[in-house]
Amino acid sequence: MRIPPVRIIYLQVLLTTLCLIRQSDGLSQRPLNPIDSINNIPNLKAAIIIPGFLTGASEFQPLVDALNSRGIPSLAVPFPNWHWIPCLGGRSMRPMLERIDHTVRCLASSGGDVNAVPDFEYSIQDCIGDFRDNPGGVMEVGGSAEVDLYPDVTPRGRFVVPSGDAKGKVAIIGHSAGGWIARAYLSDRNYGGKVYNGKEMVHSLVTLGSPHGNAPGPAFAGVEWVNREKIPSSVRALAVSGSGYRGDSSGQLTQNAYSFCCDKGTDGTSYDGDGITPIQSALAMEGAETLILNGRVTHFPWSEVFGGDIFAPDLAKIHKEEKAPWYGSDLAIDQWAGWLDQIHYE
Image 1 (spheres, one colour):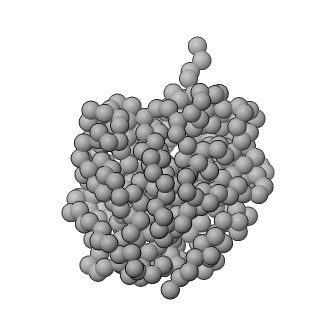
Image 2 (tube, rainbow, N blue to C red):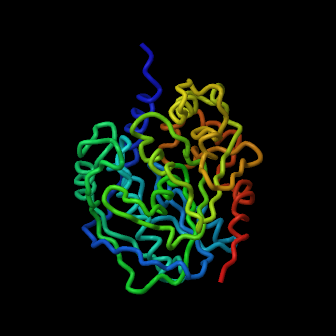
């Protein structure tokens, strides 16, 4: 009997998680700190990278370095890949939103000094507690998979609350799932018990291979939630897609991933994209400018990261043998990073 593509995806994710868990950091709890209205603060030339699902800051350090060398002070949200565990199965992204909020607040209050953003504390025990309590997903933890019905569950962790006010707005660059999660952060609607209203401290959003299109299943409940509104008018947005990886010729993971991202129940073979996100979904961010990168650009540097050849064997082989670029390669960065230079900075 053929295993459904969606179930294959979940099995691959669970296998990858077991391979990727590393030693803990340490953590506790922080008070909520509502964002005040600060529409008149200037735009800062500083960017925050939000890692995609099951990846962490270390995998994005080469992209951080590349942007810094281009005159765009940057950092990745400081967490390791195992911090995604409480979100497995399509559950609430509040654990990730807390990390994004911590980084945005600290960077904005420092005036764009990427070296002024501290780490935060989070332990294995905190992760276990969050995995037990974090609502939503296929198991309907807390009673429902619907975002608007999530109970108010504050994620564990001890985050720094900046002592000063924001001195400016920053840019956010979201890779893969990090892109649609960034849209939840910008929203002034209640997400799982908290309004982040990140648009008050963000002037631009770039998404790289992010699934913005609606699709069936709990994993896309959050995507459907953010798609109920356009990008805030105060935030410039650019949706970027790679291409050259056909669903019928790039391996089983690519075919399954494209099928997973589609709302029409297809088998994924007729789509093109970056090997994980089809073009149609990557560009489906209403209110954003769009860009399909020239050349064959893949989703991630599969052959260069731990576990890449386990999760994506066909894509890792192509990446290694053909030296295929990804969104963080110079060939790709040169096409999308210039968009950030079009902003008026003070």
